[in-house]
Amino acid sequence: MSSTLFTPYKLGPVTLRNRTIRSAAFESMGKDFGPTRQLKDYHVAVARGGVGMTTLAYAAVCRSGLSFNKQLWLRPEIVPGLREITDAVHREGAAAAIQIGHCGNMTHWTTAGQMPIGASTGFNLYAYTPVRGMKRREIEQVARDFGTAVRTARDAGFDSVEVHAGHGYLISQFLSPYTNHRHDEYGGSLENRMRFMRMCLGEAVEAARACGMAITVKHNMYDGFKGGIEIPESIEIAKVIESFGVDGIVLSGGFVSKAPMAVMRGLIPIYTMSYYSPLWLRYFIRWCGPFMIKQFPFEECYFLEDAKKFRAALKGPLIYVGGLVSREGIDRALDSGFELVQMARALVNDPAFVAKLREGDAATRSACDHRNYCIARMYSVDMKCCKHCDNLPRRIVEELKRLP
Image 1 (cartoon, rainbow, N blue to C red):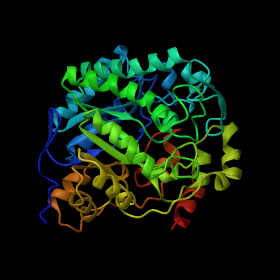
Image 2 (cartoon, rainbow, N blue to C red):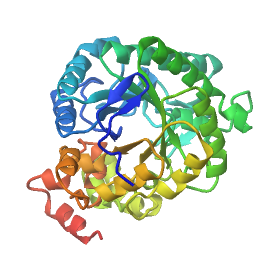
Image 3 (tube, rainbow, N blue to C red):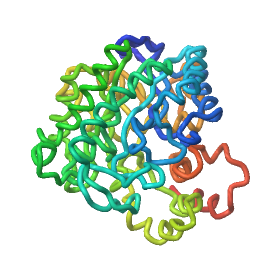
Image 4 (tube, rainbow, N blue to C red):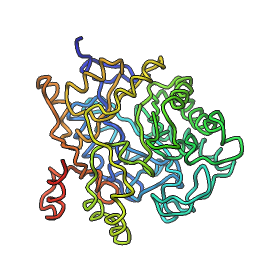
């Protein structure tokens, strides 16, 4: 079968020059909830490196949806800075997307400006903070915020938005029985748990169509632990997402507050993570991290066999993400019926990876070894490959060498 990798693809109203997308992996390159020159330079480098579309990661739709100080808060004040990025990406021949979402319970008062809110009241061990269940008026307002965020993204020159409905963030917290313990119309049955998602997608899709933008949704195939969403229920959710007429569904998995490595796979360097963490958290990670963070071994195309189950059940466009590090793996995903593929770590290692795929042969492979140094530091510093770092501390170097 001939490869479709370097054939154009029409994603809603925007045409991509090939089938590759830089996935929305958190860069940690913002400042004061806005863009920086570093963020611009990285995405321009990826665009220059041949990708079809690059995605700025995880922009909060409102203040309460922020998890980190280096995260984007999508609001009119940062439109000029974002427009500089989209204009520069377009000059390199790539399309520009931005992921929008709300972190729900994974934040702190100092970042969100209020007590963290979520589907239900409780305590989040991941963020070490109490959480308040959302009131109906807050649910309605956040859903409207998704529509507002889409319109702001269009003002900033983006071609597409990706609604984050997975990984244990707010929409996912409503969907999952692990985090949704409500007894009103937003909890209990799957139909009730999907109600908030329907509201958010209704606002976002309507805004995207009015603005002439493409819209995709990141969706969990499974949460990654007992008591969470499993594939049969997830397929039913995906059918509802598809019914909104979105331009693509990104099939991912994992719950960052419970099974973070189910999302990314591979071993996590615990000492490295603790080294880049705040002092109050450092020793907790070193002592408890090995017991709290379940490890999932890395293999290329690690989501593919499960994603095929969704391909068989759905009719609309699907986007594959998860462990793509070679031309062979990318072609395997495209040949399995997926319209597009997303990558992150291969492009952190080398922003020009896609161009090298085009210039090379089918054996071309990323130099990323998935020891996940980039992940261990990205929430505290920025997302950067260890192979681009000079003078790393000796213990970090030794830890990375020990990882298989």
